[in-house]
Length: 192
Figure 1 (tube, rainbow, N blue to C red):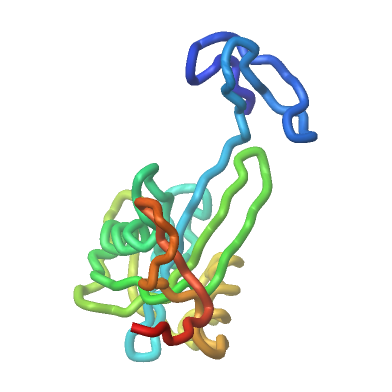
Figure 2 (figure 1 turned 180 degrees about the horizontal axis):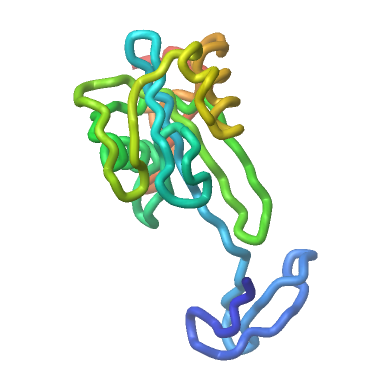
């Protein structure tokens, strides 16, 4: 989808080369439309050897089993998004532990999907009745006969076959800016 008007001043946009790429830009101010992007999150919540899955009630993927997840709000850290989405879709309270997978899907709206391994805290899997019509914890053997979405099948493999830690939150924040969430695959000991 193309933008027609500047989001800053309302002037009509024109096509011009910015940073070597043809982009929509405003001739009246400095606004550049960099593209359309969305960020989604997915959850891998394991409990007693079983993975939390939901059955989609709506398209895309209506009737398929997927891991819980959804889209981030503008000012919401991804670690909070995934906790909210799991709870909204299933009633399960879980805590984000680490990032274990990323999908980068380039299309008209460029989508980045960040997947968290999560620790089960409490709750009974109960579908929200809006986005999902069933929810539960399933073993790989049970999933074999279920209509599980392709990306979720890949994530099931990630959940059970990965070695070592994923990207963990870095609480030794060295970046001096608000609203940063830093993740890294390793962390050395810092002097006190």
